[in-house]
Image 1: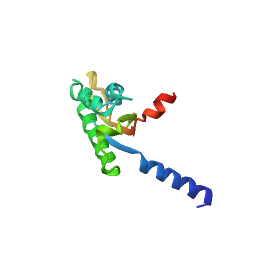
Image 2: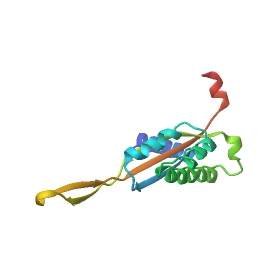
Image 3: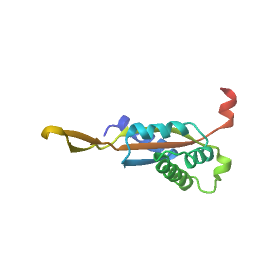
Image 4: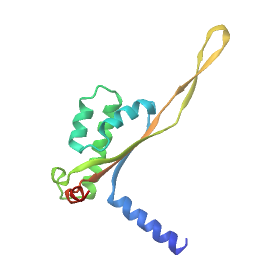
Length: 138
């Protein structure tokens, strides 16, 4: 590996260590349904997002609540001795990608068969701290 690639790889590694995230893979819900729940909490403060997911009637919100709690635990592991209430955590980015699709056949009239696609998704959630100094300058 060349010097430039090594230096940029080290920078990316340091940036990923500073960022706390959680990933949910192969969740057996269609990506379209999961995006409805992720749009509810994008950019929200962490405690407000937890409350929103807890009282949401969507099935995918239960899985997102567990994912958010996992991301908070990852943040606490990297920032020992810092309280969550004082750190002003918020959901920086959250995105849903399509996962593995299981293909099945359903019998149809007159001896035919229709294809059923059972979709799954991958969700990536990134937390960050909200700085009051940067808010005032913007």
